[in-house]
View 1 (spheres, rainbow, N blue to C red):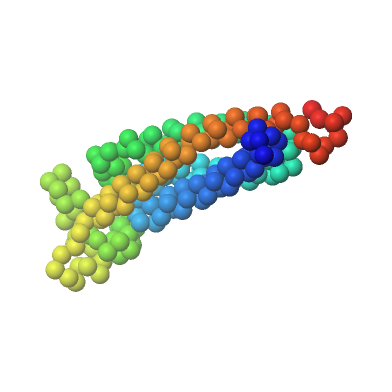
View 2 (view 1 turned 30 degrees about the vertical axis):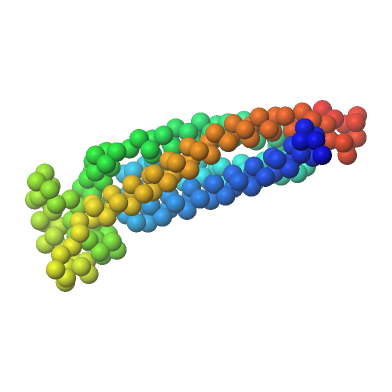
Length: 212
């Protein structure tokens, strides 16, 4: 079968949308994992990744239905929205990869400062750590947090700082999200082109007079 045919274009578009669905789920799961491990809400970029993953999953379902039924209107909106998702995904992925450790420390520090003592103690218990960063700049706050800390590790010889643990997981999450998001964002341009090409092809099963 020649790949330029209607059936080949349909199969390619369907396959591509299945990949988009998997990528969308992956972005949502990794971002949720990052937030669950203490990457606090100050890193708004994590929330942006979840939103992009959700819209990518949603538009992939629309594209899959449009491809199966060769639905002209659905394919048109699919192309437009997928291109918008590409722009946001590309920008957010670049931001994930560009965020360095110093920027992450500032964001975590500002969020930690806005937390109540009860919230800090709860997070310390969850992550089994005490305080944010044990350095000269935050020594007073760190000693206060250490005095209030009730994490399981306090009964042992020493505790890691929560900042260290959060930075470790945030760096891993940002690298995964940035790499996966950036790589697959370029395939979305292929999806837009393929949908445009498929939309303009004539369905051999359809009534010729009904073709737009």
